[in-house]
Image 1 (cartoon, rainbow, N blue to C red):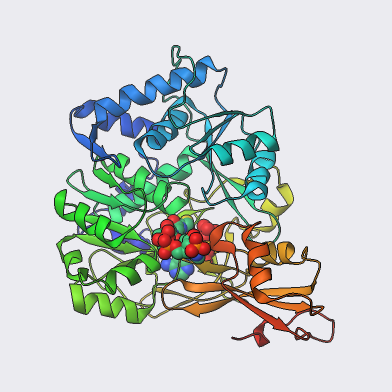
Image 2: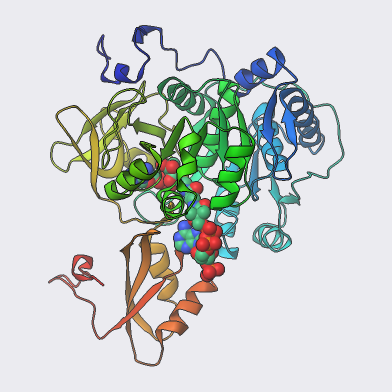
Length: 498
Ligand code: MCA
Ligand code: AMP
């Protein structure tokens, strides 16, 4: 790395970049524990019923749950699937896993039986913590040897064994993502990856113990978990957990708890901007947007009605956070900013694909050496599948995607997965799935179906609804006589426009 890395623009004036230690001198659990020991009574998390949990209480609760894991025979390296809405119990189970050296597999609560079965069979967890009887049954059906418990982890207790000793290189989290094609792959993130990213954000966003985050993002994806929760605990700050995003719930919590931070996906900002209470965002120190492009006109509308210059950043499951607009200095709408501390970024000279390297970048896909090998270039840069452009000041603009991906409300939908399901319908001859631009959702999933005439769009929609998570279901279904194809017979999706 050069002596004055480009990312030094993220550091407070006068900070010597060579003093930045993204290893944080240990792992996230060690950092969290150090914070809790320094001030055990300090409020850390407000649960969804309005009760505050201190660091001391979290330490005790997580050690107790870790004791139950140990008594159930789980040890370092074993995997635990967590599928639950936001609650302090979910946080305790998650932190207990990391403290005990177990690897967490977060699972979206919207998944249906097939989506969950894939995670269970591919990720091979020994235990699943699930907050819903039906999902619990689906996990058991996929693999009867997996023990399934609720978020209270109602198992016999025991001594927790050695806590907080997992080495930085040990796997901490397996985030499932489809990457370029095919069934979702498990991206294995080490303790060091998670710690590096959170430390970069702490520095770049000036995250201090005085900060309080309104955390309305789900805790089963990187945005809510790897940024919102991990960042809060590492900064020694606090967060108010909201079970389900609603404008009133967010703004009420921000006012009642004197919050300073809000992180959201563009759909959330769209809803906030169109609310009569939008002006209340002004009380926050920092609003961050990510997971999907924040339209420049929405940015502008928020700036004029609330004074908030929303800070847009860019990340991925495989890398946690990569690029962010600067806290000080210009925040440029329509761009995601400059690489975060530690992130080495360049563009592929031919395709313009964004290539990244750094301590935050994952170790590889679980049990998929070939997919892992092809996702890195010969110099070890990870191929993001996003196409970018750098402006004169070095700000990154994401202009296209090489991977076929639709982002709806901040959730990723891989067209191939939806197409595979729709092709199973007896009246569907062939199908292509695209995203249609939408002011609220960013994009909505759209299916173009070549059929034998014996089916209606509503029937196709309900067929999909029985088999796919809600956000993957086509909201728009077109019946077409023939899909456009090139000379080789491949569907030319570019010609499919609503
Ligand atoms: C809910 N629905 C959706 C979505 N979410 N449909 C399409 N796309 C979605 N994202 C369905 C509901 O099931 C319901 O269907 C209907 O839409 C309306 O529900 P509504 O109550 O309005 O929605 P909501 O429950 O309020 O959800 C909207 C939401 C949610 C809060 C924006 O989608 C959300 O939490 N998004 C955050 C996603 C996220 O955390 N992404 C981070 C990925 P029906 O009427 O049929 O029942 S991590 C990542 O991408 C990287 C690392 C990064 O950079 O962050
Ligand atoms: P995931 O694989 O679920 O982690 O989603 C990562 C993808 O979300 C990235 O590769 C981008 O395509 C997209 N993404 C995340 N943040 C942004 C952003 N601020 N603007 C545009 N796309 C984004």
